[in-house]
Image (cartoon, rainbow, N blue to C red; front, top):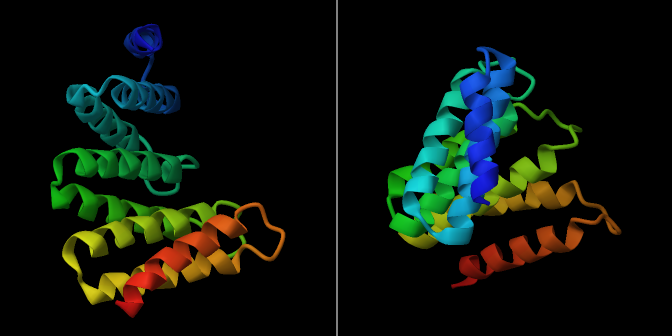
Length: 172
């Protein structure tokens, strides 16, 4: 794991500005987040978030990999929220997931994943704060994700489970 991080650090030092740099920043951030998940050193996660922000800054609206940067930053912020409980990290992750979803029009192959990510994030916030509008939004996004998974679809069971779990909160 350490070698992978150091290899990406070396690549970043040699990397010119532009698309290659944004991809290298992203890859280093992903490696740091993986190392955090393996070793639990919070500074790795904080650095990953900073690097994801830098990669996103190099991928302005219209960039073909902007959605990837939005999702990677959102996922890292959610992990940090789980570790530290800072609600602003979760709020920002939700906004980033919303921005990513906006990049996937109806029929786009990544729309399911984006709907599911957003539904999960809003569900987490509902579980933390108990705001009913978050519950309604989470159900809405999980239903929309399920609608993209007809019987036999590989993600249908995941969507059914997500919707069932969040719907239990509605009945409480």
